[in-house]
Image (cartoon, rainbow, N blue to C red; front, side, top):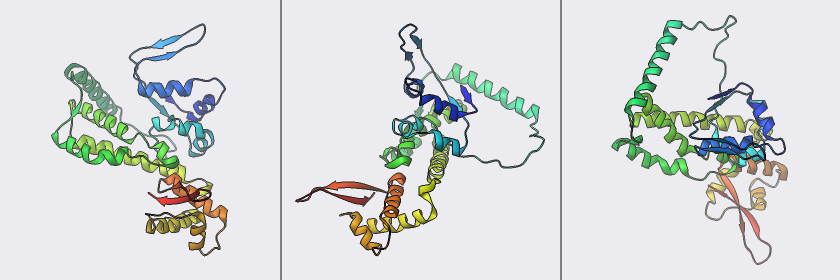
Length: 275
């Protein structure tokens, strides 16, 4: 388990020409055996199980997480959780050591029981299997824009988290409680992601309000969609083209609308449609 207190430094290193850290982290999420092939010193790690906890500020994340890392799947291999300080403690916290030691002992016992008793694959029980079937389509559906790219591994994460909760209960069966707990974590991650990446300069309140008006218009014309010219006419022809572009980009990033090329007798036209 890797703990990186300055996660922005990791993102900075990845931007260097020839650096393989991004590819290695992506592979670590997907496969058990990692290989770094260099000319003089090839390296291999077998049966790996790697976790990383990174800390950063919203500003550092927005500055250093480039479009490549968002689009190539690096960013969505991390669960983003937005946190704030809940209290001011000038002299630090006062954790009861005996209480903490009790939790550590219980965790060690749980790990030992899992190693000794869990021999089969962790699977759903009958009730949680039905719930999983109900929620799977919504979790796995394609989402557009930045938010979609950052949250596109929802079904994989919910299932992994549910496995973790089952193992903490020393069982090889995922119950509805385990699955609901995993869903709660994912909702928190998804909400955090939306909050972080909606808070940039293009997501001001005026842009959000304009985007909401356009989205209602697109939803009322869901079958045909509308061109930028038609959107401008709907807005009274008194809204700047850049403002409309910012609002449409906002809808795209949120996964609420998307552009589609439509063939005509002449040049094809761009039509925006609500999801």
